[in-house]
Length: 208
Image (cartoon, rainbow, N blue to C red; front, side, top):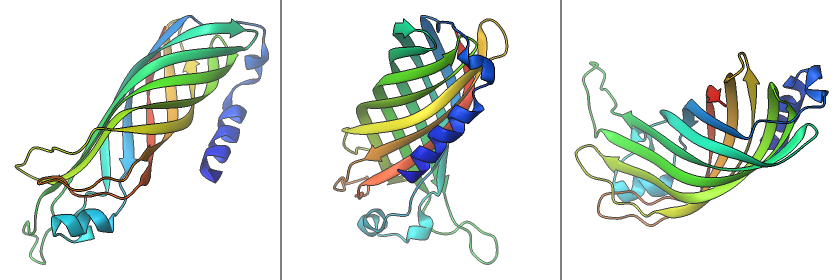
């Protein structure tokens, strides 16, 4: 929670002074962002798969896309709802002292489709937001050559972000999101998992 409060303060400070002008936000904005997510070592996962925690992928790369509708718009503030799709994956296979591949090739896949509600503050050309959401999420760890069959669970998220329009219709976007993934028992293919909070950092473009 300390990280979330700190990010909120930094984001608010990043909104330029002219964000205090009297103006309303647009009705619809769509985003497309690339992301990085640090994956955590999980003893439950490595034990259930019969591997070392050093065999687990340490991070994932991917993308997130979504659209948001600004239903209630007032002076420099707006309430919006939207939906986002997230997909991230990571892979790891260690090497031996001779530099040859050794050990299992392990994969991690994070996939989420969430409904979001956001409080936005700022100017039509640049604004920040605080958002909360939830939706079906899969977070699977599995060996190469297998098809993941992990459970589809509802995971909540909370985050902050901002959009800075460099042209009339195109913006630079930055987002910091915390996904709380529930614990899960292992399957024949996918490792077990303890409850985790994953930090997703993404940046890209917004279009209105």
